[in-house]
Length: 196
Image 1 (cartoon, one colour):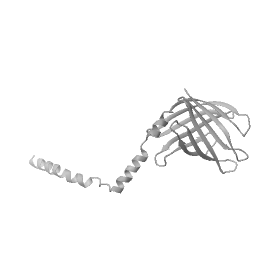
Image 2 (tube, rainbow, N blue to C red):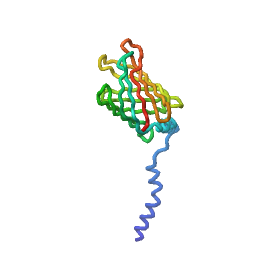
Image 3 (cartoon, helix red, strand yellow):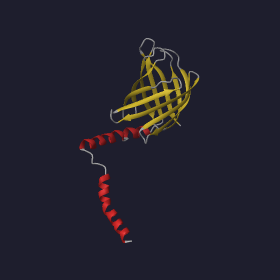
Image 4 (cartoon, helix red, strand yellow):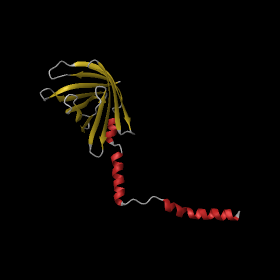
């Protein structure tokens, strides 16, 4: 009994020393600054909070033009927007028709604390590629992005400009502009999102 008590007492006295041996080393000022920079880069801010306000289910009205001066085609669809990664990124899923064919799309939108720029990605069932865009948004949620995708005919990049604006808290209008046959920019598509 005395031996057990003595062993326990010695172990208890040794615990602080053992804890010091296994404690994490203190960070240098440079390491602490790096850690703080990464934490700032990964912390959602006011831009992410504003983005979260557009989460929800939408009805889509889609108007597209195959070439400059052509009559538009009108189609419809639905979109679902949800925040993911603990409020860092908006994911959008679209189900619609495009040129009379079933169409599905997947987009992501976020704000990069490091670059101070908004970014977006887009893939859909009409391609196996990825469109990547970057841009700026104002305090009213109006945005202008530029991006590109790979042309299946030329294999080169096709550059496009996208604009979006909220006409009221439940309606967003998205427009996409790209090069026509003469290389001049024209309006290719307009999608109106109406919150359900």
